Length: 157
Length: 157
Length: 157
Length: 157
Image: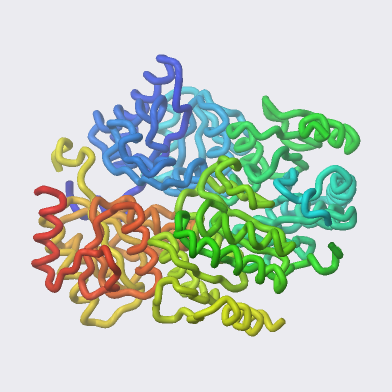
């Protein structure tokens, strides 16, 4: 990797449930793979479900993954996380996940995902919802292609 | 105050916008005053708007108020906070506010309030919505009286 | 308790090991009892050892105790904590403990205590060492009486 | 960069003052350059002084730098940080810096550095002191070469 391209590289965030249906998992993996063509780094909560699947896809696409996990135990991160940040902060780590990203993509998830969407909206981080919570202020997308287009538009790339 | 009554006293949480309409402010103050007849301690985010109004009412009712604030500067807490916890954690302090409470009441607010509702639902803290966000899982109430009834029911008092 | 006297009441902090010798435990309990004659609120990390003993003494002296604990589980606080703040922040909660206090007293403890002394010195919270770490910048005291005198001097009471 | 070599790559931590003498700055930069020959990732607090100098050297040596900063503002990170984690946690972020590293090297610094050394010792992260605080439990080194040897020994590389 060219050193120049790494410097203050854009980081994309993906949030979603730590357990999810097979179909959502497939969606996350496909999304990850395509996102890796757009940016070099992905950040997520580092655990299972959507987080694991999107990391797997992003690594398949050639990107580097960052997992900001709730515990101090690096082994609780999913195996597709390259860089583990073991915060020990519990759910308070949610705000770090979204603030580290230039833009966040929300996939289906429960209340943890909702808290992260709320943080995006409060902190002014653009958040694209793909089949996730429909909260006033989120950018809605129906397909991975639409997500990619919106990401490129936001990051001006 | 009788020492016995303080021990592991129930704490009620109130969340809502740091700026709000006069009418919501009045609602918060009235709520605070009535809550003070039910529990001895109130916890909130310690800033202005709903937080300031509910503290004012709760103190008028004879209760003790706890403000868990985002900065290190105790002077940023509203004047009706008795006990200031200056976290320096920014928005990550939201999770502390709701987890400190046995039950949380949500008044109108923006995305900060939404993140706190989400944390309640994720952590299993009962949350009563009074003219606030309508998220699946919240307990809805239409009046202060209804809120008080539900609080008593939840706290078994 | 008179409502007026509670308002922005001074809070004293005590730090020290979560396990300790019987002698240190006795020292902590005695200190707590005497501190309760000076201030109304005590804050600590809420766990065992020095924290439990100082809370016990402070309550015997008639004060109200605040425990800022690392987990989300209020039941992990010692039984002498009146107000539990369950942070879920792990060791990151150390900074909250010392910043909540107007002045901190350090009793014997290991590295957790050292991190808290360091935070006091960095944040400008006066810290009195009673048989604890001897770090440049701490105020040294040899007896409980000396501690009480210094606390009164610092709080101007 | 080979994907295989990135996976759960070892991360080295460097701590030290946010302002420092020219000589310490030079030491930090040299250390950074040599560390980049040993590991691929460096983590630090992301600000100035020692942090800036060590990042500069590490990047000159070809490594990737992670800065875990206290604020939400990525622009407060020094220009040699590749990956910025904007925590908004204030000083509570110190524990994240050291826990993210497999081994930590302490250079001269004030109380912030001391709190990080304390966290290393409490969390069991090996910490090598090069002209920094001399606390029971730290591994002492007198030269950069000695530091490198000890790092290789600890990481078994």
